[in-house]
Structures are given as C-alpha cells and as structure tokens.
Amino acid sequence: MKIHLSFLGAAGTVTGSRHLLEVDGQHYLIDCGLFQGGRALKQKNWEPFPFPPDQIDAILLTHAHIDHSGYLPRLVREGFRGPIYASEATCSLLEILLPDAAYLQEQDAAYANKKGYSRHKPALPLFTAADANLALAMLQPVPFRFPLDLDALSVTWWPAGHILGSAWLQVELSSSGGGKTVVFSGDLGRYGQAVMADPHPAWQADYLVVESTYGGRLHAETPIQATLENLIWGVTERQGVLLIPAFAVGRTQQVLYHIRQLEDQQRVPRLPVYIDSPMAVEASHIYCRFGDDHNLDVNLLMDEHQCPLRCSTTHFVRDVEESKRLNTMPGPAIILSASGMCTGGRILHHLKWRLPDESNAVLFVGYQAEGSRGRRLLEGAQSIRIHGESIPVRAQIARVDALSGHADEAEILRWLSAFCQPPARTFIVHGELASAQALQRAIQQRLGWETAIPLQGDRWTLGHY
Ligand SMILES: [Zn+2]
Image (cartoon, rainbow, N blue to C red; front, side, top):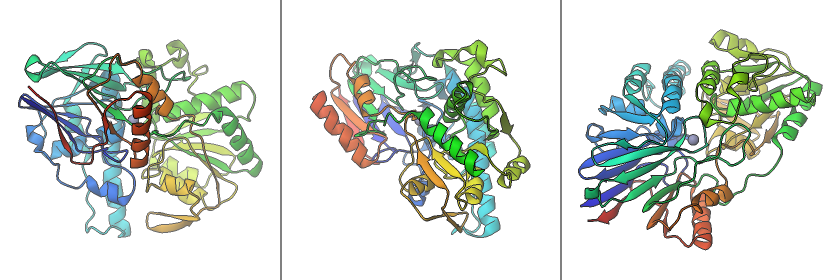
C-alpha cells in the first residue's frame, strides 16, 4: 500500500499551510491555511482546491493562526463536511479568529466596491461569516498528549510553544500503513520565553515535515524592553503615537507584558495603551483558561490590577466608531492593532493617519512576509499604497525580532537534535526559498539527514508496503 503526502501550500513560501496525507484510501488534511502577503499570494486563495474537498475525511490542525486555519471557511463553502480536530485552546481561539477573518473578507470586498479599486466587479469576499460558523460547528477539541484514533491512523497533539494551543502532530499510521510515524512540526515556538512554555521535544519520526520560517537566521538578542523604552520615550517627547501592528492573540499579549514590566520598573512614562481589536479581550480570557500552555500565573491574570498582560491604562477598543476616533487622537499614546503584517484590518487606517507624520513611530514585532506592506516599510519604502492611495512614510520605522513566536535556526536545530534517529526523509516547508535552503544546509551539516524542499503541488510517495 502506498502512502502519499502532497504539499498544497507553504511550499517555498511561509503562508497557506496545507498538507494532504493519503493513507489506506483515507485523506487527511494537515492544516488549512490562507495564503497571505502580496497580491500574487492572496490570489492563490481563489484557485480551485487541488483535491475534491468532499473527499477529505478529516482535517488536523496544528494551531489557530490564519495561515494555518484561515482557509477552513472557504473549504467548507467548497464542500468539505468535517470533522476538524484541534487542541482545546486552538478551538477557543478559532471561535474568535474565523468570524473575524470572515468579517475582514466581507469588509475588504465592501470597501473595494465602495472605492472602486478592485479589478473584480463586484469584489466578492473569499468566504462569509456564515461559512466561518459552519466551519466552527465542525471543530472537535482534542486534549494534548492523548492519541486520537481515526480510521487509518492515530494522532497525538504535543505542545509546540508557539501560541496558545499550538501543537506539533505525531501521526502514527496503522499497521496496514506500515506502522510508520509522520511528524508535522507546525510552527515551533522558542525556548526560555517569558510568556510561552518551551516546545515539547519530539523523539522519533520516519518522515518529518518541519517549518523553516527563520532558516538561516538567528533572532537578534536586541532586548525588547530597551527598544520599547527608547520608542516610548521618543513618542513622548515628540507628542506622537507609537503604532504596533500585532496579531490580537499572542503577540499583543507579549507586547503588553513587556510594557507592563517597564512601567513597573518605572523605566517609561505610563502612556495610555489602546488595544484596537474586538478580539483582544476574549484572547486575554483564553490565557486564563489554558494555564498549561504558558508560564504566567493564572491567579494574577484574573486580577485586573495585577494582570501581567495589562498596562496601567489599557483601553480595549471594540467598536469601529471608537476606533476611528483614535485616528485624530493627539499623542503621546500607544496603539496596538491588527493585522501584524499590515495586510488588512484596522491597522491600515492607523497607518494612513500616522505614517505621514514624523512625530510617530511604527514598531514591527513579528515576521513580515515578502510583498506585505510591513516588509516594504522595513525595507525603507518612501510611500506605500493603502486602499488605493499613496501614503508618504515619514514616521520612524523600527523592528524587534525578540518577540517572534517562531524558533530561529538554532532553536529548530535544538528541537531536531532530540530525535533518537534520523527520519528517512525530512521535508522542509513554511519558509521562503532562501530560508528553507539555509535550514536544509544546516540540517545536512549538523545532523546529516536526508532532506527535501517540496514545491507547491508536489506529491511524494512515502512508503510502499
Ligand atoms: Zn503560527
């Protein structure tokens, strides 16, 4: 019997994670992510899914990030009928994230129609809130560390330390599938972090699919707190606004944690901090519910004054009108808003208002994909296009890598070095080509393993029994 693994996304690129495992006549999709970044990548979301969605028996999710889960509503719209298995925290996060993703799709389409800048007339959403709700109804939460038995395999979710609920998957094929083990790393977290726990070690795989977002790179040890301290003083003196594009779940809480630490150490003035996201309040509650995934004290999290994920004056901004009022608000202040790569969402309105003024600053705290506005700003663009308008860039642009939720190359190698023997083959995915190639060289040099960098659409035969 043959086992096949097809790479339907995140092959030679960072987003759109979708891996199809065919075993014993069953079809399992590992992750179901949206392509994100520039127009060419986004366009891939509109291509027909390369396998009939109604013939997929189940979806196994590593974590809730949209580049791993955001295509679920579209796949449901195209005929997938479930189930979708994911860790408990991932299911809770998806209840916030998928409706938000649908809202963004609907809003972007409506805005494009209003302004008439779309090439498609009328512009349509990729999926709707109704599709997102259908996908949510198919979710089946699975506890960490206990194998889930499905027809042709059993799967165990192990903590990956990347975001709440994030997992790497240990997939054990039934004896008719040769009893082989396939491990999917999902996105790996970092070691020794303030908020998230370390990734749980993996120890054995016949085949391994590993991410390479930071292949060839080490996170600069720029102390996050020193960078924040400088920027906060800078905008205070200039009466400007520090804008931090950050995903509402995970990155936002990490930034809040560090600002709070600086405030408690009296290293920065206590500026008003606005969390401009309808999701962030719920996200903070989820940290209370899933204490095993992180290093914070759950009792402190529940105390409004002592909560390490709140600053002295934290305002949660839910509704759109209140968000708009922030545009004309005088500084000094700090605004956190999504999306983290400036590909959509409320951050675009803030950038439109704040980028042309040199008293402001923008701090990037996460990975910026090729072609995204965030990447262009970091590359020193003099102007960027937002909603069809050219916006001049005069604000200070800064970055800090230390908050990355992703393991860097040394940390990926640390996780790999726990394997007791080399996998027969290691597939390197979820990285731009140069990063995947750098990780490939490092794995070959340090571990001597057989590796491959699959291309989008590649279908590999894993075994013949
Ligand atoms: Zn992720």
